[in-house]
Length: 247
Image 1 (cartoon, helix red, strand yellow):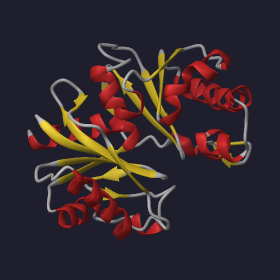
Image 2 (tube, one colour; image 1 turned 30 degrees about the vertical axis):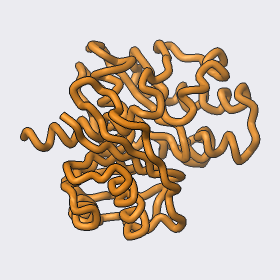
Image 3 (tube, helix red, strand yellow; image 1 turned 90 degrees about the vertical axis):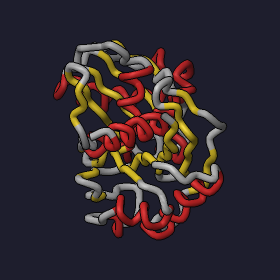
Image 4 (cartoon, one colour; image 1 turned 120 degrees about the horizontal axis):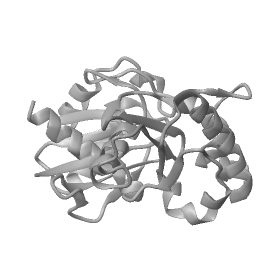
């Protein structure tokens, strides 16, 4: 089944049609810059631009960088505060003219990796982290998602973890991969203390650079890059839309 998957991020809005049976993109993904300020109205126009690029008229699955509850966006760490408490599914459906289903962006990436990628058929506790403007987190127990964890906002040294160890911070502070990995190790140690996962999957923009920093990471759990790389969020958002259509 073909669904348009869209991933809203703090720096970019990207999407592509997805074959949700095979877990593959049906066309080269299209990206627009996330507007600043990232108000609901401005971001909705970006989502609509992605849909228009593909002349899309069917359902859209959309990943959002925050908590989603019953179609409402309940947080907005890297977007405008106007998203908080918004009936965002309704708003995006109205602006695009297509039925839109929302899911937390890290949850979306995790769904894709658990079905088609590095977590496939793994019944043990698995955690997925998407590293970009912020840090998204998803957890699966016996293959089932624990939604809306938002563990990028755990406090480390008096700051949100993503304000110490996201890829945005690596770039802003011009950190070497080794120096950044030391910061991320501190975050992972906290995660392992709290959740004791058997497998950790790293996705987001840095996943394609795993060879640059993977050797510096120290975890008890097995740690691997996402097989679907930065497309996982797009694929998982589309998968989630299918689930909502069949229930």
